[in-house]
Length: 315
Image 1: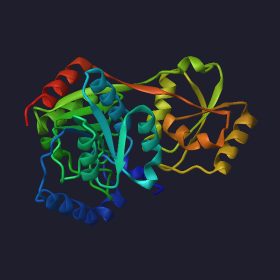
Image 2: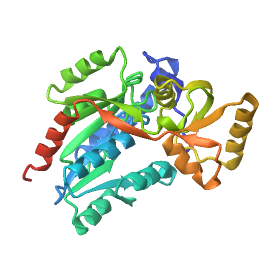
Image 3: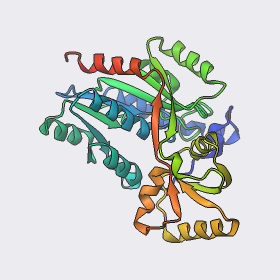
Image 4: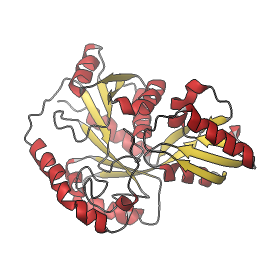
C-alpha cells in the first residue's frame, strides 16, 4: 500500500479537514473498545511487543533490532516475530539481515513456531493493538518531532489509540529530541506515573565512507523522512535536494534513473536509508549509497535491568 502521511496530521491543532473526518474516528474508537473483550491467551514463552500508537515513522524497527541485540548479549535465546504484510517487505528484509526472524500472517502461528524451536523470548515488531496476545512487556515508540501530531485518531489524525492508552503500557522510547520533549514526558507521566521513559538517537555507523565536503541528493520512502534528513544534517551532510516517496514505496528502476540523472546535473552524490536501499539492491546501481545506523538508547543500563527483571519473572 502506498501511503503518504497527510500534512494536517502533524499540525499543532486540528484543522477543518480533521473536523470533517472526525465522525469516522468513532469507528476506530469503537473497534478499540470491543477488542478489550476478546479473550487473551497467556503463552509459554516470554514476549515483548515494540509498537506505536502513532502511525508510522517512530523508529519501531531500529528499536526492535536494538532490543534484540541487547537481549542476545544478555544470553537470552531470542527470536524476532513480524506479522507478514506484502507491502512491508523493506522492514522484513532489514529484520532478516540483522536479527533471527519468524514471519507469518498470524501472530499466534509465530508464537507456536518460536516455542516449537525452543526459544525462550520472542520480540514482536509491531502488534500493540493485537488483543489476542498478552505481552510480558510493552514498549511504545514515539518520534519527538511529531509526538502525537494533532492528537486525533485516524483518519482525523495519526493516532491508532488515544494517548491515555499509555496507562496499560510499560516503557516509552523517544527517538531524537527537541525543546518540547520534557513537556511530552510530563504529559505521559501524568497518564501513567509508573511508565519508564527513555531517549534515543540514531548513530551513523559508516559515516567514514562519505565525503562531507560533497553535495548530496537524498531520497526515502519511510514513515518519517524528516527524521532521516535531520540525522544527516546533524552529522554535517550538505543536502541540496530531498525527494520523498510514500511509506513502503516499491521503487521502479525508472524512479532511480531519474534521481541519478538529476544528481549528475548538479554534481551531487546520492544517499538513502538502509531500509530503502534493501528494496533497490537488485538494480545494482553503484551511484546510490545508504547510511547504516545504530540506535543508541540513553541510560541503556536501566532499560537492561527492566528487561532482565521482567523476563526472569515467573509466569
